[in-house]
Image (cartoon, rainbow, N blue to C red; front, side, top):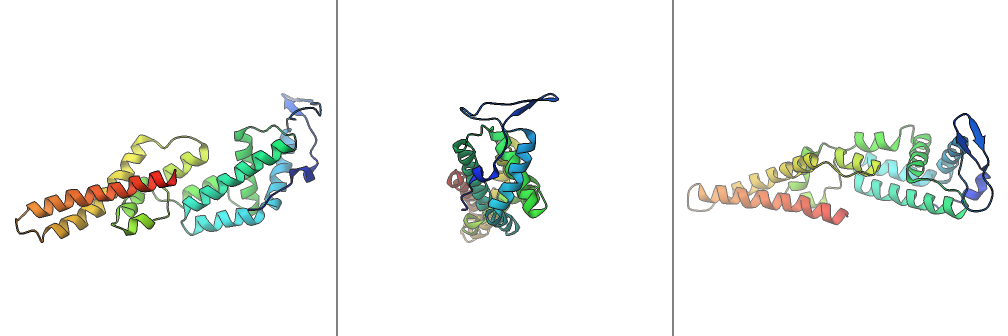
Length: 211
């Protein structure tokens, strides 16, 4: 990952309050003005251009997990860099700066790109629930992606939809295997239940592994 030196931007210090402008002394952290934040976004777009393009490539490939991981590492790196050079920026400001820098690089905001490239929770669950193969699914649902980008928690209804979807392929495969059991009907039902549980288990395992 690119290491970017923010000191090269030579930003002015100060903060806007209403229509006025208040300067801040050089001791301690300095608050960047709105104009400075725009300049930081442009500079970061240049300094992190290759990293942002890699994030975009991951999204185009449907690998939202890696895209989110790299994007978060960029946020952490920028937060450390701005702190080292005396600028006090909130998490929201850092996210906005990087989101704008991503747009400067790719032509579309990261939030839009990430959500547009993801499946719904139900479809994501179906892909995760395919026996064995589902473990290698690299996608994250659009709802979970949006929650991560916004720093919030995924809604319970979205997780329920994902786990419901994950039960279907396992149940279908399990029921098919269960038809080989000599007792009519019993094997099919039992296989479907076991297969569905395995599908949900795969989705839960992937959630834990992401964390």
